Image (cartoon, rainbow, N blue to C red; front, side):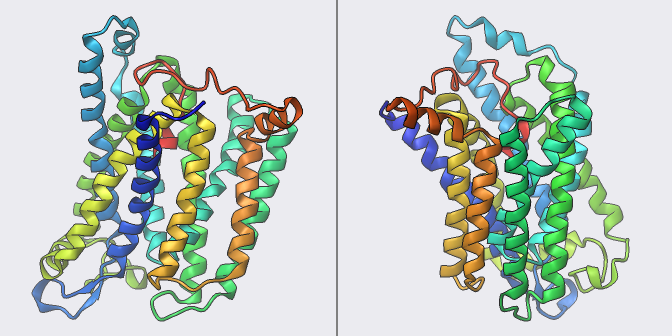
Amino acid sequence: MAWTKYQLFLAGLMLVTGSINTLSAKWADNFTAKGCGGSQEHSFQHPFLQAVGMFLGEFSCLAAFYLLQCRAAGQSDSRADAQQAFNPLLFLPPALCDMTGTSLMYVALNMTSASSFQMLRGAVIIFTGLFSVAFLGRRLMPSQWLGILATIAGLVVVGLADLMSRHDSQHKLSEVITGDLLIIMAQIIVAIQMVLEEKFVYKHNVHPLRAVGTEGFFGFLILSLLLVPMYYIPAGSFSGNPRGMLEDALDAFCQVGQQPLIAVALLGNISSIAFFNFAGISVTKELSATTRMVLDSLRTVVIWALSLALGWEAFHPLQILGFLILLMGTALYNGLHRPLLACVARGRRPNEEGEHERLLGGSRTPINDAS
């Protein structure tokens, strides 16, 4: 079945905005500028403020949901009204997990390369699988266990590539190791978030765009308030601002005033996460979950290639091997091998009918897949 122009647009939008999301965050991290009070030039290391911006982007998904709902209101679709009755506080526990995991990942992105950041996020498969067995009573198929094992092997290879790569003054070896570990720790929290969403949220049949927007609202509100005490909490060498505090939002705004391109990077991060969420959910609806997984893997390739082209990191052949092993693990865990085997066995293309549906339908798209 040939793709329509709209489907091609959605696929391209997901690939481009997903790549911009990580690259813009890393671009902001690479800037140096003077801070408040005429302080010396220093790197823009404000992960918690960047996380606030990301949640603002997620919050804007609520606007997209209500626009789609208004469009659907003129059509005879009773399913749109079936999603109204739910308690928004259901999203508070997942939002707290999202807030913690996202903040950790932005801290880690200051310490490691953009490509390793993107690849190591594949560790979420390991913890999601284990937690679904432990807390949801799910039984994993042998192919999913193989996928988890392959993912573990891929993470080891990517970690070895980071250890063996050249390290400059911006990314010392100790920082790279800490950053990689923080990314993996963050995936544990993301996996807890996914389990909470499946156990308590999905039964209410809330549309994913509305779910992402509601979690974004809670994350934006809570983390914005937390910026105040963070301004007074000493963080020592862990801090990236001259005052040595956990976060210094005033220093960040002063740096933005000194270097306006930082604002461009931050706006790129905020807007891209909103469009990426919309495009990702739309791809699942209009095409298939398999297509979404393939596009997400291509996003890693784009981020890696552009990081190399821009000179943000050095090439290491082990990363290719690690990426391929991670890709195989993701494919096995998500069952991508089954339609491919069926295609080979039957001599025809796999039937993806039923894997996609209308955008305001009641599917069980994993909310966290949009983040």
